[in-house]
Image 1 (spheres, rainbow, N blue to C red):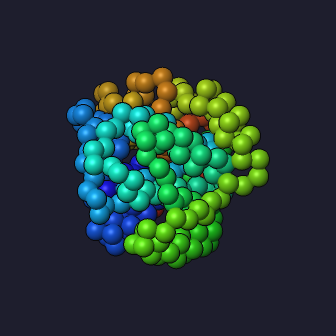
Image 2: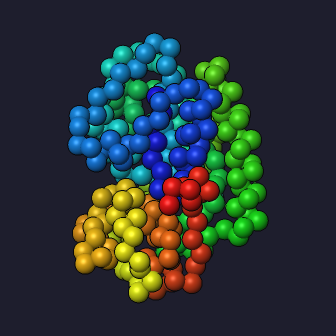
Length: 258
């Protein structure tokens, strides 16, 4: 089984590419949490266990860590377990955080891969150029093919994009981000809004609701996943003063979903 978290499609595309080859079940952690049902799963002896997700401020997404802490997997007896993370440029010590969280559930992470994908966190900067996006996606296709081969043979491997000052980025900058930059108050909607309700539907944190035909952010914090701002069909959602001049990005596999 493959547990995935995806806001703008990069991680979903990777999870699906792996699922198609491995013939594994795809499970959205955000959908599972929204369902409100017990997070109980069963794994067979010949199954593998995968986690696919984006890097958020040099850490795994908060919601993914919350899901792992709450889930219960029966039948696990050391089956091959892997993780694939997508990042814009560097990941810091993301995988170390994931390994520690899984270890508390007595799950051992055998293989870890990180793949650079197009940037889309708009509050910190613009999206990658079209040429850079295409280059990253082309390289990612080759890396996914390699990962599928490794999973088939249960090869233990570690190929990361930690970058420089990885400990500082994850432990210090990541902690500061999660403490001070998770607020929803900077989000707002412009007159371009067509009241389609897509933002409410795709919000991974469940903090957007439609009132009088317009989205409002009802929670004080969210994952800062970028789904609402990047996938709005009219570029009507903004965050602070700078995002109005920046582009928008979602993987082609999610453009079809819009």
